[in-house]
Amino acid sequence: MIYCQANYDMKWVTREHAKVDRIACPWLIKNFVDKEAEFLFVPAHKVMDTAKERSAIPFDIPNAELGHHGEECSFDAIVRKYELDRKEPALLELAKIVRGADTPNRSLTPQSEGLVAIAAGFSINSKDDYDNMAKQFYVYDALSLHFLPLLL
Image (tube, rainbow, N blue to C red; front, side, top):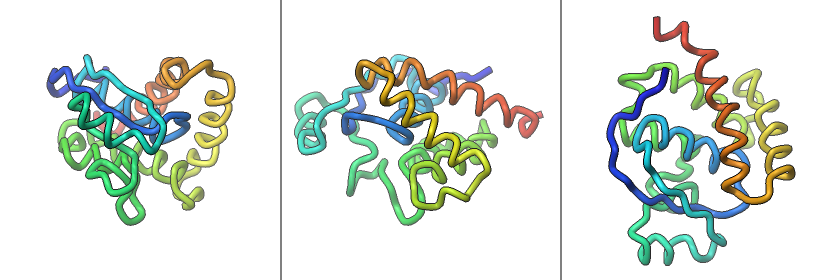
């Protein structure tokens, strides 16, 4: 199935109340960058301070390396930085779905609008961001397996 490229035991920090990109990115990181990654969800105004205090990598916040750039979202930035598409080209297709769901370009893929609805529902139905992450990871597992034929 899906294997991590490395095991760095990194800490990552982003804004609380995650929906699409801030759940998709932890799934991507856990599966392809660092299976032992630790995620911190904090108020938006505390992300950069928390990053410094905890030696954590900020993501999906304005002006972050692993944030939105042009029409791309944070998921795209992580795929690019860690060259994840080299081993898993199907991630480029998954990135399009996430980008469409997390940006105004909802019609980018047929799945994007549905992912927005699913993410919003899980956000409402979860006790916190960690519970939300645990519930939604199955969605990204399924979407990634949908593109498995691209890898064969």
